[in-house]
Amino acid sequence: MKAPYPQLSPDSLPLVQRLYQRSRSFFELISGKEAAPNAAERLFVGRPAELSIEQKHVLGVFEDDTLVGVFDILMGYPNPDVGFIGLFLLDPDYRRRGLGSDAYRAVEQWFKSLGLCEVQLGVQLNNKAGRLFWESHGFVYLKDVPLRDDDDLNGNVLLFSKALQA
Image (cartoon, rainbow, N blue to C red):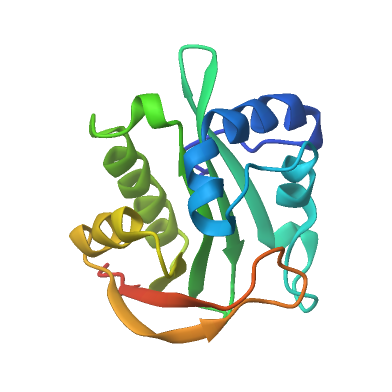
């Protein structure tokens, strides 16, 4: 099964940067400031050193021709049978309409079709709405983990997991 949403390339940087700008409140919540003018560039290259670029998928969620959401996905991280969602960002104007839940469920089905057994993700400590969203989809808290050294943020994130049933 192919990915449920189009794979974005660096050619999509202006679209992603506009989404980041429209999502100013998210970036202010997690970092205390709006997204940097080049923040979207990191989305396409940021990954743990042990992963190949082929294991990284940046998927765009579109409504008509407008990019309204983006997933940053790492396949086989931290274990071969795990899909890791590094970011799921949805335009504030499209939240609370069911689109985020539908988008996540489509990604979950894709993971299952690839034989993955688990989904993991991190939630910023002060992102209460994000935590509630993921818990409503069956994710459970595992532990606090430090952010990677190359991350612009400091501190820990809450690591969540969900087992995938075939």
